[in-house]
Image (tube, rainbow, N blue to C red; front, side, top):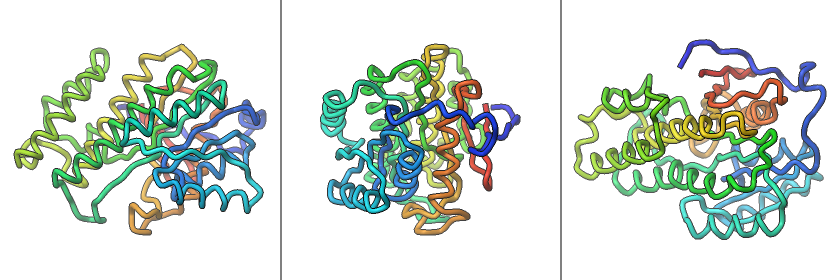
Length: 298
Protein backbone atom coordinates (compact mmCIF):
# COMPACT_ATOMS: atom_id res chain seq x y z
CA UNK A 1 0.00 0.00 0.00
CA UNK A 2 1.27 3.44 -0.87
CA UNK A 3 1.46 6.39 1.48
CA UNK A 4 -0.46 8.67 -0.89
CA UNK A 5 -3.65 9.76 0.87
CA UNK A 6 -5.88 12.06 -1.20
CA UNK A 7 -8.73 13.76 0.59
CA UNK A 8 -12.27 12.74 -0.33
CA UNK A 9 -14.44 15.80 -1.08
CA UNK A 10 -17.30 16.75 1.22
CA UNK A 11 -20.92 16.98 0.10
CA UNK A 12 -20.55 20.75 -0.17
CA UNK A 13 -17.81 20.51 -2.79
CA UNK A 14 -18.61 21.29 -6.45
CA UNK A 15 -17.94 17.75 -7.71
CA UNK A 16 -20.84 16.44 -5.63
CA UNK A 17 -23.24 19.25 -6.44
CA UNK A 18 -24.75 17.07 -9.17
CA UNK A 19 -25.95 13.91 -7.44
CA UNK A 20 -25.91 10.73 -9.46
CA UNK A 21 -28.36 8.88 -7.21
CA UNK A 22 -32.16 9.04 -6.94
CA UNK A 23 -35.05 7.40 -5.08
CA UNK A 24 -34.58 4.42 -7.39
CA UNK A 25 -31.01 3.88 -6.17
CA UNK A 26 -31.10 0.82 -3.90
CA UNK A 27 -28.73 0.45 -0.96
CA UNK A 28 -28.40 -2.41 1.54
CA UNK A 29 -26.76 -1.88 4.93
CA UNK A 30 -26.11 -4.91 7.14
CA UNK A 31 -25.98 -4.87 10.93
CA UNK A 32 -27.98 -1.65 10.91
CA UNK A 33 -30.21 -1.65 13.98
CA UNK A 34 -27.67 0.49 15.86
CA UNK A 35 -24.30 2.19 15.68
CA UNK A 36 -22.62 3.02 12.39
CA UNK A 37 -24.98 0.82 10.38
CA UNK A 38 -28.07 2.61 11.71
CA UNK A 39 -26.45 5.99 11.14
CA UNK A 40 -25.59 5.05 7.55
CA UNK A 41 -29.16 3.96 6.85
CA UNK A 42 -30.39 7.25 8.26
CA UNK A 43 -27.96 9.27 6.15
CA UNK A 44 -28.81 7.39 2.95
CA UNK A 45 -32.53 7.85 3.61
CA UNK A 46 -32.02 11.57 4.26
CA UNK A 47 -30.27 11.82 0.91
CA UNK A 48 -33.20 10.19 -0.88
CA UNK A 49 -31.99 6.66 -1.60
CA UNK A 50 -34.15 3.55 -1.28
CA UNK A 51 -32.51 1.87 1.73
CA UNK A 52 -32.83 -1.63 3.14
CA UNK A 53 -32.01 -1.89 6.83
CA UNK A 54 -31.03 -5.38 7.96
CA UNK A 55 -30.47 -6.70 11.46
CA UNK A 56 -29.86 -10.08 13.06
CA UNK A 57 -32.58 -9.50 15.68
CA UNK A 58 -36.02 -8.99 14.18
CA UNK A 59 -37.38 -7.00 17.13
CA UNK A 60 -34.43 -4.63 17.30
CA UNK A 61 -34.52 -4.18 13.55
CA UNK A 62 -38.19 -3.17 13.65
CA UNK A 63 -37.49 -0.78 16.52
CA UNK A 64 -34.77 0.85 14.43
CA UNK A 65 -37.17 1.24 11.52
CA UNK A 66 -39.79 2.80 13.82
CA UNK A 67 -37.20 5.29 15.08
CA UNK A 68 -36.48 6.37 11.52
CA UNK A 69 -40.16 6.56 10.60
CA UNK A 70 -40.65 8.86 13.60
CA UNK A 71 -38.11 11.17 11.96
CA UNK A 72 -40.07 11.18 8.72
CA UNK A 73 -37.81 8.72 6.91
CA UNK A 74 -38.88 5.63 4.98
CA UNK A 75 -36.74 2.49 4.85
CA UNK A 76 -37.26 -1.18 4.10
CA UNK A 77 -36.44 -3.94 6.59
CA UNK A 78 -35.70 -7.64 6.50
CA UNK A 79 -34.02 -9.81 9.09
CA UNK A 80 -30.52 -10.94 8.16
CA UNK A 81 -27.92 -12.83 10.15
CA UNK A 82 -24.82 -12.87 7.95
CA UNK A 83 -23.30 -15.71 10.00
CA UNK A 84 -26.22 -18.00 8.99
CA UNK A 85 -26.25 -19.22 5.34
CA UNK A 86 -29.97 -20.00 5.58
CA UNK A 87 -30.68 -16.44 6.68
CA UNK A 88 -28.65 -15.11 3.77
CA UNK A 89 -30.61 -17.30 1.37
CA UNK A 90 -33.92 -16.05 2.77
CA UNK A 91 -32.81 -12.44 2.49
CA UNK A 92 -31.62 -12.82 -1.10
CA UNK A 93 -34.92 -14.47 -2.07
CA UNK A 94 -36.85 -11.62 -0.44
CA UNK A 95 -34.69 -9.04 -2.21
CA UNK A 96 -35.13 -10.74 -5.59
CA UNK A 97 -38.92 -10.67 -5.23
CA UNK A 98 -39.09 -6.96 -4.36
CA UNK A 99 -36.25 -5.16 -6.13
CA UNK A 100 -35.10 -5.19 -9.73
CA UNK A 101 -31.48 -4.29 -9.04
CA UNK A 102 -28.91 -3.31 -6.42
CA UNK A 103 -26.65 -0.26 -6.47
CA UNK A 104 -24.88 -0.12 -3.09
CA UNK A 105 -24.00 -2.81 -0.56
CA UNK A 106 -22.51 -1.74 2.75
CA UNK A 107 -21.19 -4.74 4.66
CA UNK A 108 -21.28 -3.31 8.16
CA UNK A 109 -22.35 -6.30 10.29
CA UNK A 110 -19.54 -7.38 12.60
CA UNK A 111 -18.77 -8.62 16.08
CA UNK A 112 -15.92 -8.50 18.57
CA UNK A 113 -15.60 -9.86 22.09
CA UNK A 114 -12.52 -7.85 22.97
CA UNK A 115 -12.29 -5.12 25.58
CA UNK A 116 -10.38 -1.94 24.79
CA UNK A 117 -6.71 -2.53 25.54
CA UNK A 118 -7.16 -6.28 25.95
CA UNK A 119 -6.82 -9.31 23.71
CA UNK A 120 -9.05 -12.35 23.41
CA UNK A 121 -8.65 -15.46 21.27
CA UNK A 122 -10.69 -18.38 22.53
CA UNK A 123 -11.85 -20.87 19.94
CA UNK A 124 -15.51 -20.10 20.61
CA UNK A 125 -15.01 -16.41 19.99
CA UNK A 126 -12.72 -16.92 17.02
CA UNK A 127 -15.27 -18.99 15.13
CA UNK A 128 -18.06 -16.51 15.81
CA UNK A 129 -15.96 -13.51 14.83
CA UNK A 130 -14.55 -15.08 11.65
CA UNK A 131 -17.90 -16.50 10.54
CA UNK A 132 -19.58 -13.12 10.96
CA UNK A 133 -16.91 -10.66 9.90
CA UNK A 134 -15.42 -12.60 6.99
CA UNK A 135 -17.17 -15.77 5.83
CA UNK A 136 -20.68 -14.37 6.28
CA UNK A 137 -19.83 -11.10 4.56
CA UNK A 138 -18.21 -12.97 1.70
CA UNK A 139 -21.18 -15.31 1.24
CA UNK A 140 -23.69 -12.45 1.28
CA UNK A 141 -21.62 -10.47 -1.20
CA UNK A 142 -21.26 -13.39 -3.59
CA UNK A 143 -24.99 -14.11 -3.31
CA UNK A 144 -25.88 -10.52 -4.25
CA UNK A 145 -23.39 -10.07 -7.09
CA UNK A 146 -25.93 -11.09 -9.79
CA UNK A 147 -28.26 -8.25 -8.75
CA UNK A 148 -25.91 -5.27 -9.17
CA UNK A 149 -26.65 -2.91 -12.05
CA UNK A 150 -22.97 -2.88 -13.10
CA UNK A 151 -23.03 0.74 -14.28
CA UNK A 152 -21.78 2.58 -11.20
CA UNK A 153 -22.43 0.09 -8.41
CA UNK A 154 -20.49 0.06 -5.17
CA UNK A 155 -19.56 -2.35 -2.38
CA UNK A 156 -18.25 -0.72 0.78
CA UNK A 157 -16.85 -3.07 3.40
CA UNK A 158 -16.64 -1.55 6.88
CA UNK A 159 -13.22 -2.68 8.04
CA UNK A 160 -10.40 -1.71 10.38
CA UNK A 161 -6.77 -0.67 10.34
CA UNK A 162 -6.22 -3.64 12.63
CA UNK A 163 -6.56 -5.73 9.46
CA UNK A 164 -3.76 -4.02 7.53
CA UNK A 165 -1.30 -6.86 7.09
CA UNK A 166 1.64 -4.59 6.33
CA UNK A 167 1.40 -3.16 9.85
CA UNK A 168 -0.06 -5.92 12.04
CA UNK A 169 1.01 -9.24 10.53
CA UNK A 170 4.44 -10.62 11.41
CA UNK A 171 4.16 -14.00 9.66
CA UNK A 172 6.42 -13.35 6.67
CA UNK A 173 5.17 -16.28 4.56
CA UNK A 174 1.56 -15.14 4.82
CA UNK A 175 2.57 -11.53 4.16
CA UNK A 176 4.26 -12.62 0.94
CA UNK A 177 1.07 -14.35 -0.21
CA UNK A 178 -1.03 -11.28 0.53
CA UNK A 179 1.45 -8.90 -1.09
CA UNK A 180 1.35 -10.85 -4.38
CA UNK A 181 -1.84 -9.17 -5.56
CA UNK A 182 -1.50 -10.50 -9.10
CA UNK A 183 -1.87 -14.09 -7.93
CA UNK A 184 -3.85 -13.62 -4.72
CA UNK A 185 -7.04 -15.67 -4.76
CA UNK A 186 -10.08 -16.27 -2.57
CA UNK A 187 -8.84 -19.83 -2.06
CA UNK A 188 -5.56 -18.56 -0.65
CA UNK A 189 -7.38 -16.21 1.71
CA UNK A 190 -9.57 -19.07 2.91
CA UNK A 191 -6.45 -21.17 3.51
CA UNK A 192 -4.88 -18.40 5.58
CA UNK A 193 -8.01 -18.09 7.73
CA UNK A 194 -8.20 -21.86 8.16
CA UNK A 195 -4.55 -21.91 9.25
CA UNK A 196 -5.30 -19.26 11.85
CA UNK A 197 -8.24 -21.27 13.19
CA UNK A 198 -6.01 -24.34 13.40
CA UNK A 199 -3.32 -22.40 15.25
CA UNK A 200 -5.88 -21.16 17.77
CA UNK A 201 -7.24 -24.68 18.27
CA UNK A 202 -3.72 -25.99 18.76
CA UNK A 203 -2.79 -23.13 21.10
CA UNK A 204 0.09 -22.00 18.87
CA UNK A 205 -1.34 -18.74 17.47
CA UNK A 206 0.81 -16.53 19.73
CA UNK A 207 4.03 -17.84 18.16
CA UNK A 208 2.87 -17.84 14.54
CA UNK A 209 3.11 -14.11 13.84
CA UNK A 210 -0.59 -13.23 13.91
CA UNK A 211 -1.69 -9.71 14.95
CA UNK A 212 -1.19 -9.19 18.67
CA UNK A 213 -4.08 -6.80 19.36
CA UNK A 214 -7.70 -7.97 19.08
CA UNK A 215 -6.26 -11.00 17.28
CA UNK A 216 -9.46 -12.72 16.16
CA UNK A 217 -11.08 -9.47 15.03
CA UNK A 218 -7.88 -8.31 13.29
CA UNK A 219 -7.53 -11.56 11.32
CA UNK A 220 -11.18 -11.44 10.26
CA UNK A 221 -10.65 -7.91 8.93
CA UNK A 222 -7.33 -8.86 7.37
CA UNK A 223 -9.20 -11.53 5.41
CA UNK A 224 -11.96 -9.07 4.50
CA UNK A 225 -9.46 -6.52 3.24
CA UNK A 226 -7.70 -9.13 1.12
CA UNK A 227 -11.00 -10.43 -0.25
CA UNK A 228 -11.98 -6.88 -1.18
CA UNK A 229 -8.79 -6.54 -3.22
CA UNK A 230 -9.49 -9.77 -5.09
CA UNK A 231 -13.08 -8.78 -5.78
CA UNK A 232 -12.06 -5.30 -6.91
CA UNK A 233 -9.61 -6.80 -9.38
CA UNK A 234 -12.22 -9.28 -10.63
CA UNK A 235 -14.67 -6.49 -11.47
CA UNK A 236 -12.18 -3.84 -12.57
CA UNK A 237 -13.71 -1.88 -15.45
CA UNK A 238 -17.03 -3.71 -15.20
CA UNK A 239 -19.07 -1.08 -13.37
CA UNK A 240 -18.65 -2.34 -9.81
CA UNK A 241 -16.24 -0.75 -7.35
CA UNK A 242 -15.17 -2.51 -4.15
CA UNK A 243 -13.58 -0.52 -1.34
CA UNK A 244 -12.97 -0.77 2.41
CA UNK A 245 -13.65 1.92 4.97
CA UNK A 246 -12.18 2.17 8.46
CA UNK A 247 -14.43 4.46 10.54
CA UNK A 248 -11.79 4.90 13.22
CA UNK A 249 -12.29 4.83 16.99
CA UNK A 250 -16.05 5.35 17.01
CA UNK A 251 -18.39 5.50 19.98
CA UNK A 252 -20.43 2.29 19.53
CA UNK A 253 -21.39 -0.77 21.57
CA UNK A 254 -18.31 -2.55 20.18
CA UNK A 255 -16.06 0.04 21.86
CA UNK A 256 -18.28 0.16 24.96
CA UNK A 257 -19.19 3.74 24.10
CA UNK A 258 -15.58 4.91 23.97
CA UNK A 259 -14.16 6.73 20.98
CA UNK A 260 -13.10 10.01 19.45
CA UNK A 261 -16.29 10.61 17.46
CA UNK A 262 -19.90 9.50 17.16
CA UNK A 263 -21.51 6.93 14.88
CA UNK A 264 -23.21 9.79 13.03
CA UNK A 265 -19.81 11.36 12.38
CA UNK A 266 -18.46 8.07 11.01
CA UNK A 267 -21.58 7.52 8.89
CA UNK A 268 -21.35 10.99 7.38
CA UNK A 269 -17.84 10.20 6.17
CA UNK A 270 -18.76 6.65 5.11
CA UNK A 271 -21.67 7.97 3.06
CA UNK A 272 -19.26 10.34 1.32
CA UNK A 273 -17.18 7.37 0.22
CA UNK A 274 -20.16 5.26 -0.84
CA UNK A 275 -21.67 8.11 -2.86
CA UNK A 276 -18.59 9.41 -4.63
CA UNK A 277 -19.39 10.79 -8.09
CA UNK A 278 -18.58 8.49 -10.97
CA UNK A 279 -15.63 10.57 -12.09
CA UNK A 280 -13.99 10.28 -8.66
CA UNK A 281 -14.90 6.66 -7.97
CA UNK A 282 -12.01 4.22 -7.72
CA UNK A 283 -11.81 0.61 -6.61
CA UNK A 284 -9.59 -1.55 -4.45
CA UNK A 285 -8.90 1.22 -1.93
CA UNK A 286 -8.81 1.28 1.86
CA UNK A 287 -10.32 4.51 3.14
CA UNK A 288 -9.49 5.77 6.63
CA UNK A 289 -11.59 8.31 8.52
CA UNK A 290 -9.49 11.02 10.09
CA UNK A 291 -11.26 13.86 11.85
CA UNK A 292 -13.83 15.18 9.37
CA UNK A 293 -12.04 14.02 6.23
CA UNK A 294 -11.29 10.70 4.59
CA UNK A 295 -7.94 9.55 3.31
CA UNK A 296 -7.25 6.54 1.16
CA UNK A 297 -4.45 4.03 0.93
CA UNK A 298 -3.94 2.03 -2.24
